[in-house]
Image (cartoon, rainbow, N blue to C red; front, side, top):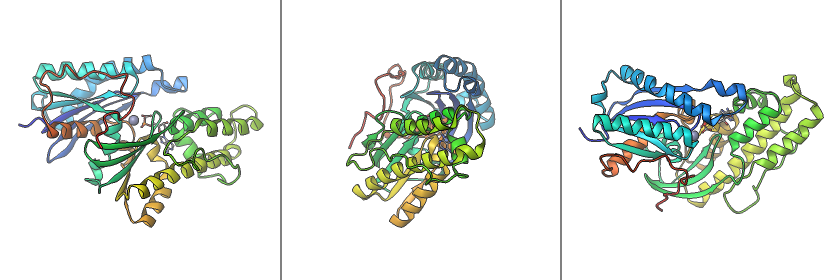
Length: 345
Ligand code: KG4
Ligand code: ZN
């Protein structure tokens, strides 16, 4: 059996503990995601608690996933695990577990870059991307625009200079008294409001680069919210704020992304990350891609958010690309690797 035949994927970079079993020719045999609800109490992810929860959840999820896949540990041919970027305590738990598990079974372990996994999550449902492609990864931790020319061949075009777009959603939501994570709540309220009511800035949209900045926009919303007094608010009182904030976000993301599409003559656009669940963003990019005559590949919500299926997929492709060291000792949770540093274009 080759190393990429049946891969156990493990994702613990933030507050979702996820395990998947991917089998060549048969696709996903099991995929479990345990979202750690305990962070709601604190209005944000508490790193120490996230690491502890991963530690508790991982062994149980792995044995449940194997049951679902109707496999025994000995049926696995490799383990793929997120090594970076992410919360280091959370990453360490996943990496240590993966190494021990693989070592006990005598199978290889491969470390996966989390952003690279998001770039390819859409392939689980949509097949191969038409190349060259642009990928936009938008989540609570990342806002990345990447050119893809093949597996492992990336050019990093731009990212956020301050808050990630999901972080801006969550902070705006918190100011408006909405539960964590706030993105889906702001999205739902925005659908009820008037996007033209407040003229919020479209940060850095007029610049020639592909970088983003969302902290000023977040502050502009917070300043406007001062007129409302303190939460809780009626839905109708904050719907226009949410709609106007979301319109600024969608304009900015769409403007830069479609400019990147034109610049590299991309044949497809791929989205990834939790914010790719946003209905306004999906609709707008759908219309833009249709007008441009290119394919838009958006994963289903489960595969947009942090998940182990995408980690297993990139692990399998990495193993296909060449052998990895047998003992896996070089796989470490990395603090330095903050993005897709390993670009080979
Ligand atoms: O990828 P993800 O599950 O975790 C990481 O942050 O890596 O993304 C979670 C982020 C949160 O900031 C959440 O508020 C945001 O994605 N999000 C959304 C929507 N659904 C999730 N933001 C805007 N609109 C949504 N519908
Ligand atoms: Zn992520």
